[in-house]
Every structure is written in structure tokens, then in C-alpha cells.
Image 1 (cartoon, helix red, strand yellow):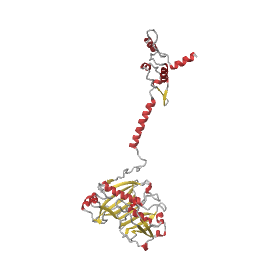
Image 2 (tube, rainbow, N blue to C red):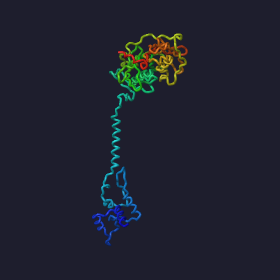
Image 3 (spheres, rainbow, N blue to C red):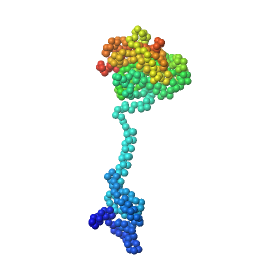
Image 4 (cartoon, helix red, strand yellow):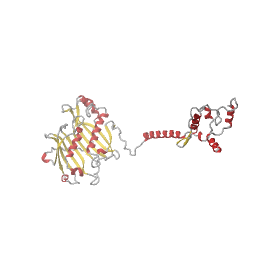
Length: 418
């Protein structure tokens, strides 16, 4: 028993060194004996037995962090001599590697995050396109270009972008060019001089040729520019290309005139307004061979389809409180037989806007189908004549659409025009 006790004591209380013995002799009291010496021969403060046991217990507990032995601070009652004279072993001289490892890991993760933000490159170069949607001026400040990525909510049943999506891109690019040039007034695309005179732009004619429909995830570049159209009109053209292939998607041309916002009457272009926009005009056409055929008035007896009771929703109105021109196309397509929409895709359209629609307007959509498409032949080219009118018979839009068979169901798409 004595031997076991001695071994246990030796583990917790190492034998004093020669230096410790000398220190003990130097600390002999007047009586020739040690003055309150501990097991290591070091003079300690007079404390209660229970307090001394607590200090010794705290000093001998071996703590580990992540598998590495570390030292713990002893109670404040331990003197500096206690610490300085502690036995020097291999374990208690090791640095706290866990703290060092944690610091290095934190620095590494922070650096990696910064590198990710600075040097991140998408797998596809077109994933980040015009992040703020502002576009830029190109070709000697005469043409404005903006890029769009086709979103999932912009595709239709054919898994391609709808014609309404393409027209919305055209309209958005036109407005952003006005804003980019610092000419945006209070109205919808109105310049400051136009806003002072309560003038707004209204479209009178639009022709669109669609050579290819983009799919979900495709990126398109839309270019637009303006020019003069007669004495009191403005022409605006667009050319849309696929970002990756450069293939032409859409060509479009339109004619705009000014209307007084309060009287709803057409107006000449004031000299002050012409001075604002005249130096942006260029002579360039997106559609060299425009369809100059006159659009006939469609009579009731000539219509194959009639859709009545069409009313604009609140979301169909623009900032000028009339129906957006893209909505008119939606009403036109609603009057066509479903067989044409299922087997064909819209190749071109020509629209003449004759009257605006207000929030309380009720519209009728008439359509006449020409060619073999009227009999439901899936491989035949189809041309349709359209009319939107109010219930009282006043014309809103005259139109003509041309359709071609869908390439996915009936072979490859026709070759692109040179």
C-alpha cells in the first residue's frame, strides 16, 4: 500500500530538483525547518487545506482541444514561483495548434470567398448579360443596343419565346434609348419639351418579320435607331440577333406621330422638340423591302372568325392610360383557329393603328384566313387579314399576318434571307 501511494504521489507531485532543494534550504525558517513547503519544495502562501486541494486539482487537469493537450491557467492564488518552477515536459511546451489551425482556416475561407467574387467566371459566357438592363450606345452614338435573356415565363407552348415577348423587348429598348440619352420626360418616352406641351408618342404603323424564335436561356441583342418619317413623323427600326450565333431573329420598323395628351388629337412636331431629337436621326432601314400593300377593311361577311366582348384589364394599360400596342396583337391572335396556332408559327405581321382603346372599351376581333391553311392543311403557308374594332364599329387596328409551318413538326426551318 505504501509503495502504491508513493507511486501515485510521484505522478501528481514530481520529485524536487537540485535547484528546488537549494531553494528549500534558502527558505529555512529560524527553527532550521522549511517554512510551509509544498511537495515540490516551493514556498507557498498559507491557505486552507480545502483551498490548496482545489488549486492542486485545477493545476493537474489535462485539457485537450481537437486532440491537442493544452495548459490551463491555475487559480489566482498560485504564485509566479509555482509557474516558473513547474516541470518542463514535452507536452506542456507544445503551442496551442488548434487555435492556430482555426485562424489559418478562417483566413483561407475569407480569401477564397473574395477570389470567388472577383474571379468567378460563368460556365457560359452569356450567363451574365447586361445585369442592370441599361444597354449602351454603339456605332457613333447612332444605334442603341440592349441584351435580353429569354426567361422561363416568356416562352409559350412551343418552348420558344412568344411574339409578345419579342415586341416587349422592342418597346423596352426604345424607351431605354430615350432614357440613356437623357431625354426622358414625364411621359412614356416623351422628351422634356414634349412634356411641357402635353405631347406623347403614338404608333401608327408597325411591320415585324420574325426569322427565328429564340428558346429559353438564349440571349438576344436588340439594336434600335430612329429617323425621320415625313414632316411630322418619326421612324424607329429594330434588328434583333442571337448573341451566340449572330443569326437574325427579328427585323422591325415602325412609324410614330405626336398626340396631345389632353385633347387626344394629333400634333405637329414643334421646333423645340425637333431640336432635341433631330440629331439622333439616321437614314437606315431594318426592312429594305417593306410590305407596301394596302390593308383592306375586313367586312363581317368576309370574316371567318369573330371574337367579341374583348375588354382591357388594368394591367393592359400603359402610363398614358391607353391600351399598350402589344396587347392589340394578343387580341388579334385570339380570333384565329386553333389549328393555325398549333401547326404554324408567325412569320410576319403588319399593323395599322387607327384609334386608341381606353379602359372601358369593348373590342371585337375579326379574322379572314386565306390559302390552304383555312382547310387545316399543316404544310401550307397561311396569310390572314385582321380587324379590331369597337362595338360601335369604329376601327382600332387593321392587320395582316403571314404564317409558316413549324420547323419542329415539319422539318428544318427555311434558310435565312441574305
